Length: 114
Length: 112
Image (cartoon, each protein chain N blue to C red):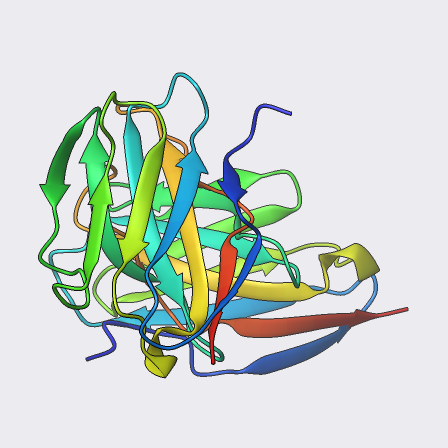
């Protein structure tokens, strides 16, 4: 399977704990995006990378959220000191710059904060 | 502030008929528009896109129409099939490589 993969698919954590999610994009895609989706809403953009450079991070929800893409391949999204309001689906997408096609999404990581 | 709006939360259509899903946007800087389909427990799947230099793009049973003056786009599915039943999201960006702004989605049900 050469699509976007995300791990874990589900994560249950207690309030105050840190969590980290991983995204592996389609191999030749140089752009990688993170979104969050809550119930009844469309995906909400968080941040994106071109290769290893994080080009937009002002839409990260708070300073508890951070993302990395150290070698321009996989990416991680970390949430520190989780809160119940962080419960959501976290989606990763990738795209080849210059391609007319849209962003390709992974299956998401569902986070539940208890 | 919702810059992309899908005002119909749900739509029911009979198999074989046309499904029309609508989307409005408020940001005149948007110049690239997409439709995604989403099944439960899966990520959104890219369907079709259109840039602001066009007013129509077609791919098989799916056609997207863009009316820039009205800031409105629509997705036509002809003929509709039961497998088309899913949530459809409209998205827009200021450029094809940038962040997508999504609507809240329209749940389409195609009945046999």
